[in-house]
Each structure stands twice: as C-alpha cells, then as structure tokens.
Amino acid sequence: MNNKHILITGASRGIGLEIAKMLAEKNYSLVLTTSNEISASKLSEMSFVKNNNVKVYALDQENKLEIASFIKKWDQELWGIVHNAGICKTLGIKDEGDDPLDEVLNTNLIGPYLLTKKLLPFLSRPGRIVNITSQLGHEGRAEYSAYCASKFGLIGMTKCWAKELGEEGITVNAVSPGWVDTEMGKLDMNRMAEEAGKTSEQYYKEICKPLELKRFNSTTEVANLVSFLLSEEASGITGRDWLMQTIWNEL
Image (spheres, rainbow, N blue to C red):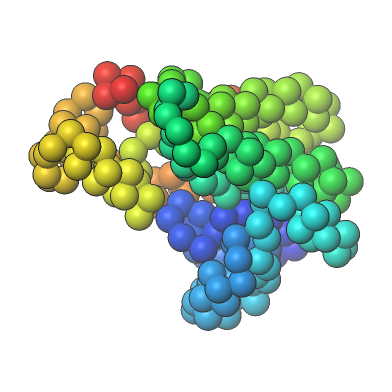
C-alpha cells in the first residue's frame, strides 16, 4: 500500500466500482463512499476491499448534514478526489409529478462542491481532482433538465477549480462518458427502447450506429482514463473535459 490516499464517491457499482478496483490494484489507499448502509455493507464484503484494507462509508450526498458529519471526521492527507456519485431522474418541464431538481442538483453538483471545499485543506500539493460528468453536460435531452443542469454545472466547476488551484499543483479534470455498459446505462436504454416501441437489441444497434466504436464503452475504459488523470504522469493536464465517444447524432 502506498501513501497516496484517494476518495472515490459512488463506488458501489458501475464506473465507481471499476475505478476503485483498478486503483486498489495500483496500491492506492482508498476511501470509498456509497449512498446508504446496505450498499456500504455489500461493498465492504468485496474481496478487493478486504484484501487492501479499503475504508468504506455510507454517505448520502443529497444530505448536507451527512456531508458535514463525514468531513468533520476526516483526519488524513489526500492525494486525490474522484467525484463519481450521481443520480439521474427525469421529468419534462410540462409534466406533473415529483420534481427531481433539488435531489439531483444536491447529489450531483452541490455534494461535490461541498466535499471539495471542505476537504481542500487536506489535499496534497500537488494533488488531483477528477469529476465524472456526462456528455449530457454538453447537450440537452428532453426531460433531462435536472440531470443536464447538474452535469453542465460540474463541468463548469471543473474549469473554475482548475484556474483557482493550478498554481498550487492541484490538477482538476472532468471525464464525460457517453453510453457505458453499466446497470444504469442499460436501464436507461431499456426505458427509451420501450418508449420507442422497440426491443432493447434494436435500440442498442440504433444507439451504437453513430458512435465511433459502434458499441458502448466499458467501465474499464473509463477507469483507465481516470487512473491516468490521477497519476504523476498527468501533472501537466488540467481544466480539461475528456469526452469519450461522442453521442451528438443520437440526441
């Protein structure tokens, strides 16, 4: 185990879990968060967590009191922060129903802001911040107002933080995946396929047609990019938003 501590939020599944596994293999000292005690307990039982003495905490980023309590207990230097935790809930601006705006913005945007601001004194110089955003932080999609707003905002904060922290040697970058082969990605695709009256297989082919690689990216491919941005080799890269495959023609 090396002496570089990295905090990864939303680490119980999908992209966050793959990042955690990869960084554990690279011998980083990890602190992982997930949204509730049930998922934290399941994550704690995974072999890579047990074998590498990884610390796991339940942290609901929508809840500012939980964030404050988590930060109050922090007592170690950090090499990097990976803001991966996020939720996606949809509602059209003309539609009735429970509006997800506050929940999505608090989790996807306000949470990363508060964690970064309060943990900044513990971040080493040099250090690293990587924000997992989305290509829906560049393009709007009908009924995704809250999610798009949160990801547009996170990309904006990435660029602001890079300018504020650069002279201290802290790099700040964003990674914007498009379609990724995750549980959340598949659920989103299946819902859209059903709304279009098509099978998941048919809709997958349509989605992939305009993509350069003609397929979804894997979580490993996303984790590889994040791992590089956290490394010493990425010391001269900051303020960038790293788009993976473009999805503009699909939107």
